[in-house]
Image: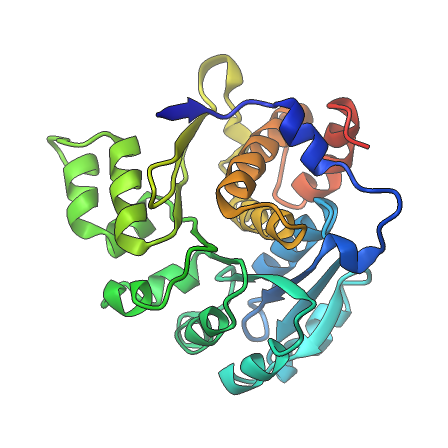
Length: 287
């Protein structure tokens, strides 16, 4: 049964922090970045993961991009990562609890890095370039996906990964609802699928489904800005790093994303979302 996503006491409690825990008790998120000049999206995702409560966040990038990131980041750690072989080595550290791949990663780097990330069998968000990189052969990535993965396509990316399902739901004569399409896609991919839009749909392979309606009185039109999807990917990653299950992390992040945008209001740009999140968390009683 499909449920609407609303703020619940369970969600509020999950967002709070145990006052006796140390930073590794709240997880270590790893965000992969692309080359020089492509790092803004990954920095947005990393900042969101840190703001939503991950104990540590490390941004890993090609060596040539390190100076660019170092000039703009302080609380987020940096590490050079030349290739997928190095990523496999890094993932031998079992303190790394979640990964985010896609924002600003670049198509070629995504094609190299995603299989290595999935080999690591950690909770993982695949967004943007990490989805587009496999548009020509989606089964290549579906065969490697595990149950702790969240795919976060917008309708265009959804159409590239699931062309037949998209045609049935998004074509001129729709034969399938967007929720049913998301459910079918989750079953095919073998993981959580989050189809972004004013009404966001989320589904798992085993039949759980939810939606978030950001229309009418609950509209968040200022989310239609470059980088807001990267922030959503980071929020999901940060919540999974803290131990939240993929479906619940996707639902919680979707609610926070829209609620933060509504709280901030007109003039919002993507950088504002992580910075305004603490105010929203206080307003809803998170401790």
